[in-house]
Length: 361
Ligand code: PMP
Image (cartoon, rainbow, N blue to C red; front, side, top):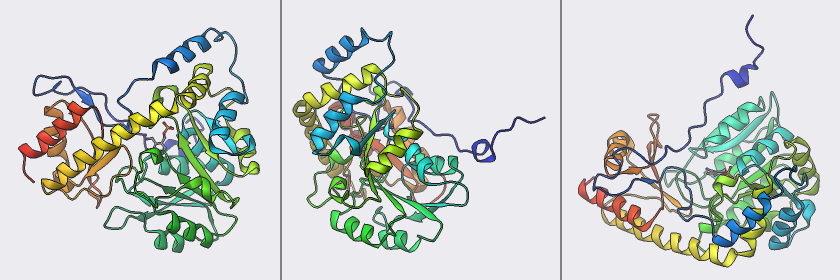
């Protein structure tokens, strides 16, 4: 007898994580760099590590189920009530919970494509059908087409700003106009995993859209705050939705050190945001350099950029690997085949430019 695994689960595509740094170990003889998971190259601040170490003394106990201190710290930082914040084990878990809360078999969830790879997996897991709306040629969400894709069966729309893996951020006014068109019983998830890296005036500011109960903002401590290994993300939304997310969350999911890391990181936010500014400056340097070499790099508003290598994706991936750079290839033969490259250490970014310059397009 076959095991009773649900078909939605049996047919799930695997989530492909960025490969660890490795390959040729630095063709130039230097170290290898992992630029494949949009991680922050800076290790946690000493003050954060101290708080985490102190918290580890309580590891014989379960974590605070309600994540009280971390929730208060985040809510206080954002000027919201604690009933508007729900934490989870990474924002990808919070996304799963949000979709579990609103959609099921027979329902539809609209999202852009190409976008964050976890979206189709999270949607399929609920039994709903994903409706993929192609990006524009500028690698942006096509908000008009996304609005037109909403049907009576649509339960949620996922907006990714800045968009992983292509880079552009949505304009605030455009998102506000989009949200105004969406029926009130359709959840709009504004995934702002990389928002702290966005420096263009006018980009989407999800929390300012929260006067609409059907808007929820998804954020993470994994990127700008450099806590990917701790697995903490959160959403901001209507109290009723927040209660639903908490209800479907795994109990005690956010660990004691992770909760402490959130509180300590917010206490050290200025230093962390200085690091973000340094990474943004590096992003500008590398993207400008690549454009100078003739690459049509779309707007990059996260801690990564898109190299449109198209049919040459495997070749370019090999070239970067030979130089000790692990980048993230997307190659399914579609319009958005290319490489997503994380902004990393200065030497890693230099090497990206060297590889690009050594092999003219
Ligand atoms: N949203 C987007 C757009 C992402 O790129 C990622 C991570 N790659 C996440 C959410 C999830 O991040 P985490 O689970 O680490 O919070």
